[in-house]
Amino acid sequence: MQPLAIPKSSYEQLKSKIIEGQLDPGKRLTEAHLAKELGVSRTPIREALRRLETEGLIKPLARRGFVVAGESKEEVEELFEIRAVLEGYSLRVICGNVSEEIFRELDQSVHKAEEALRKDQIERVFVCNTRFHDTLHNLVVDKGRLHRLIVDMRNNVLRYRINTLHNPHGGRKAIDGHRKIVLALRLGDPDLCERLMREHIQEAKADALRFLFKEDVS
Image (cartoon, rainbow, N blue to C red):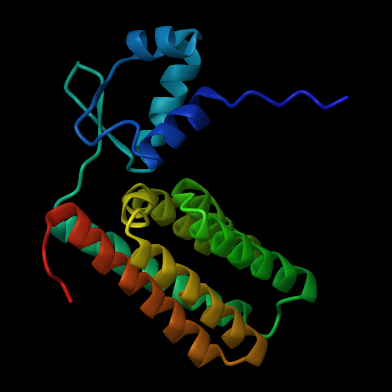
């Protein structure tokens, strides 16, 4: 008998909708409407909105609820730049301290992303690539502030990433970048690890800017 799945909280449901692009930037959110849509009271909705505002995923409207946050070109660039610095540094921190179990998890994420890309399962590619980064993020969970900063920044850029992966070149570049990162970790070269992660996120930034603002940023 299969165990019952634990229902997602209101916060998790709303966060997923924003990150996966189901709630577009500028979309107005109210407690009453969301409570009705999710079939819950206003209390968990109020708490969810408070957390999402703290994470920068929504912005308040004066006495009129919230809107899904949208970013200018400069703000998107800044988000990716900060993420590149944070994740590059975190890779330097963990280099030389990655177990074989973690390497197996990373390799599995890359393999499954490859398989999904061949089948044109873009959402699955997104899930596998996110899992790859989550595996690395969890290695710095003991460094509380660094981990929190990385997760908050990651949440703000993920909603831009899933759309860019619909370009097959975007998905291929992401997977190739992950393969190089795993190799650098196996070599135990902290300089190479940090450089490759920064380059990987810079490529993601360029793809996001092309998609969002239709600009040639090559």
